[in-house]
Amino acid sequence: MKRTTLKKGILIGLIALLGTVSMNAQSKSDRKEPPSFTELLKQMDKNEDGKLSKNEVKGPLKNDFAKIDTDKNGFISKKELENAPKPKGRPKN
Image (cartoon, rainbow, N blue to C red; front, side, top):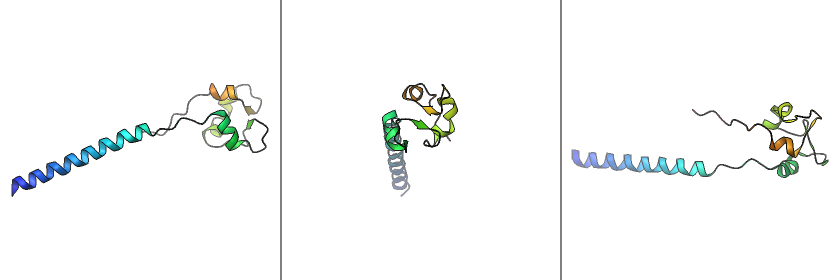
């Protein structure tokens, strides 16, 4: 009886371990690349002037607008976006 219980416990533990390893491997490969400047224009350029102003952007772009707009003209250019500091992402627990 004890051997059967022990075998079942080990089997359940191995299944749980394999499931966890499989999920971790999948989540790392599902990471998305940041959107390109063209994609951001399609999503956020409300007045379709080919520029991104602080009133149009949202999220990390809005929060870091002053850091990204290095020439301080009130717009984010493609070059400024390419040279922008990369967001740090979510903190790990």
